[in-house]
Image 1: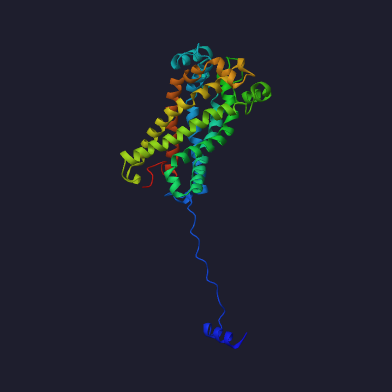
Image 2: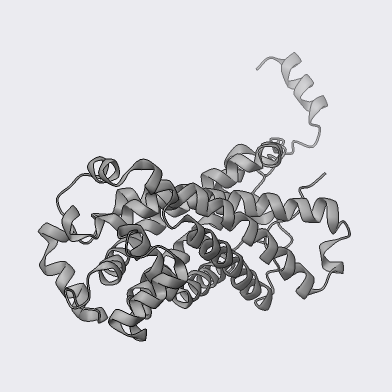
Length: 338
């Protein structure tokens, strides 16, 4: 170093202190949908939602087993079972009153597992997809996020449901005395005759075709109706309304969504029931639908299903939000941020 360079260095750093590099400004933290709620969506939150889903789906589907037994028989044998009340009377007269509760055990097990995934995974997927698209897009395109999250959740929920749904339908639609009705024996019989029954996942594709549109409608229209109520009717802060009022909004929104769900998913629901008939063994879905009639697929048992699914969906949301409220998580849905 020449003298001139040394002098310049001495002037710029007269005390010969070591130079420090300036730290870069911290990067702005990425928006995380999980932390954007009044109550953060932690692992504990999701676990409680999953358990709420177990109660919501397992209890309600088991409670309406008599309706389900009658509805399934109306679908597979509409000539004999022409109406809800008359169908119940026919089943009770021929097989005894207990026959109206056939398949309650696989119903309880299967739909509890489905509820675990349906509600819990919906909350997870909704937050994950919202984080992926960012805060503004998550608000602007929230309807698409609800549809994507509910479809994703139901995809896995049906895998959990399918084996027990197949057992339930077989128990409920088999002629009296031709198939075991107790849980263990029915599962064993389905497993022993896999070539014929296609157990445990033979009904998965029609189940997806029934349940995924159903669940997309269920969550989308629930969210939309709740949003309407809190945006146009109950316009004060949600906390200013009693828990009873909030759960009333939940039930009405769930019932409305359920009626739409029933109409959307009914053809596939009828097809799932028809798969359990002995004369349809080995037939493809298209063949069964063509033989039964596409209009029949869409209409046979629809009135009963609308009554059943409307009430069912309203009760499911009520139980789910009731459990969430008891756990201090509040009710679901609401008006969007302005």
